[in-house]
Image (cartoon, rainbow, N blue to C red; front, side, top):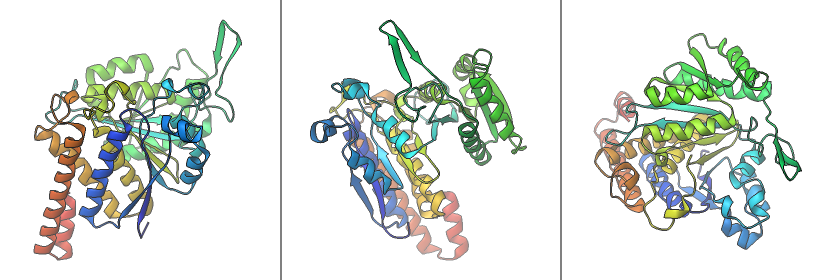
Length: 382
């Protein structure tokens, strides 16, 4: 990553072709601001258009191209509207997660100053195990994990393994060490004693390696109540696949809107930025979708790359994107779901402008005080 950067770009369906370019605009602005080499965006077919042009929602050439990339942006998909047999197959995001072994799904929920948060002050992260659990489309080597022995009986199996739970628990506790050192384990061990009981117990075993971290646990049903009442008191929440999906949607709305809920899916060697929300086909093409989730997901992707390659420029670029979003919303520029009137494209342009301004301020400060001490102070303020 010392030269140029190659990032995959999969626009997806619905509002994807609107919010993904918005994220690209902000990433490019942040790259310029910190002096990163130019980014090469590798556009790849995916979704309904790929069905029409390649005969598959996730063509083999797309998966082959992703094998040669470290990171990419994935727009939302609208798989429920695909024609058969594509509608009944594993959906595009599940296909890619499974193919690349992206076992960790990190989903922050943070409220913005001036936004319409149900629970102001929310700042938490859902750490969701991404490969097994009770989502039948991801927990088997082959097939979807669902079957019907008769037309009137449908069966799905859930899988929890020690190996997968250890990996996601380690990710959660490492993240907590960078934040407020509090991990909440969510399970349903009072009913699903063996499966989620194993998940809870293995997380507890991993917790013993992190004595600085405070640990508690709740049943999934109780956790929904706790989030509604006091989401602002939680830090890192670790849970299995389906519970994590439900809690992250709830947390996003409590923080202000599902439109601001970002995520990154990762293994140890690859990562995919993906907004937590869906494709919203009812508003597609109207330039009114909130691009914040996709923009912040791209910031998470840059941060992941920066940590992997020990590249401070990527870390600063991610921070500039987040600060640009914060300043834009605080200034009163927001899309309709946050109570504003800005279009998708206008909001993205405002964030990019805020990033450009921050980059100029940084360059000016560096010129005025070129000493190592001055540069260090400027970096800390960002």
